[in-house]
Length: 261
Length: 187
Image (cartoon, rainbow over all chains, first blue to last red):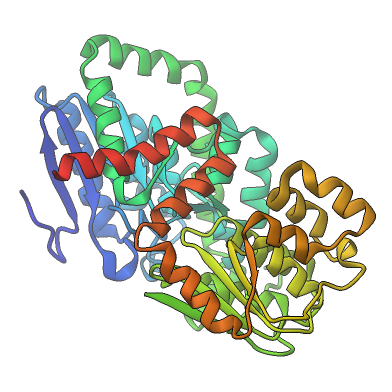
């Protein structure tokens, strides 16, 4: 089984025809560094092209899915560079996977972590899972689907509350809202997600891929346009003084002072 | 091994919520709450946050209670799984008007809560009748003993109780069966 290293913080494990892609930076709550996102995109694209793989499980393990982007890394991205950054590319790779992807989520699933999960087809949540889009607290917006991908699952109210207040919700509320599709004990979340992926993988592969394409096709054109617009909006926001202040305040563990500039 | 959490006098709801969430994350086999229960509500969101965290806790929550009981004590009596209460301590007569009390009583006592909340019945007696509350000269020792008696499987059972309170029956069953599948597979 491949091991993660600081330069390769994503583990890949094949369980039969199911490829388990695991973010493996537990010391930093599986924060999404450029290296994580680059490896993640590569793992999904390679698996998508590999005929031996029929479905994916995307996980951070049984303790934490991902607490979100490395703010240090995000702070270094300029507005013009964001749309082509590893950040934007990795989320696009997960959303674009032709094969079914099941997220196994335990613990924190915040910010970019939540957007990764939202890019999958089914979300199996452990009972410790906590979902949220806290970006507004640091003067930016979610830039990889967090203002758009809640709504198809939860409806517009929960979407607006997530994007505008940054409120976190636990696994039970996530299930009630439809954000999570199943809730299992966190200790078994990867096993449960893998079992679900195996169930899907046992079906006809062409039909599974076609069903996925059909399900997403209904909203692909407008959603893709909206997602592009979201990236552009975030790119502009990253250049604002408020975004710099929000990030600085977070890193300095103090309350931000937003001026609307 | 359970974790003990002491509520300081004057602790605000938001601070209590944050501290309890941290305590629950490292609670081990259970969380034992003691300390000052005389406080009121200073922040509705904070109160909802800490009460919700305890209500959906992943481990058993025990309460060692000495008087006097304020609105905070009433909420804790209603949300704790296992309570040991010092003799002679009673809930205030207006306990149904404590913030969150009707909702918590309904969850703790089911349909029996209706008359109790509307007429202001004896909360301690009602909880004692369910087995959730016992009276003890040394509430701390008694609460510790109740948690210990629940055994090492209590956290697993508590998680399944939380699942049952939050999920439809089939999904709650499936949640609990994951524990049993794992036990079977390990044999």
